[in-house]
Length: 103
Image (cartoon, rainbow, N blue to C red; front, side):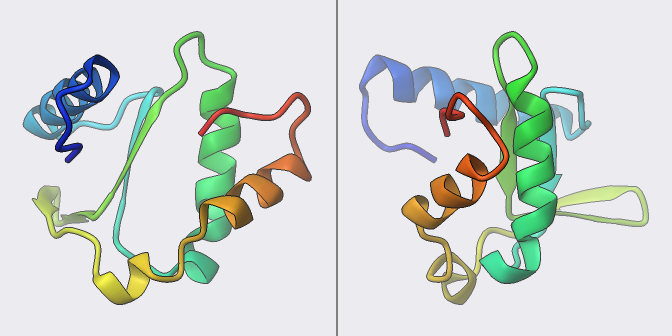
């Protein structure tokens, strides 16, 4: 969760808490299980591209697993998180989207 009290981050935290309390995917909300970037890349890019077409964008929460219709907040493993690079994600998206998508 964002830990700063800046208004944009507080709004984001509220959206995350609300999404986790419902645990129901929506067109603007998608949950992904923790995986390294190379394994999750294409699914994330497709989801980001789809959400870029929504009026207010969307929210992808990584670290939420679904097992037998039960959602579990499992978190992101540090080893997986270490494989994510913001610049690499933006470069990958730029290959498919113009203008650039805000992430």
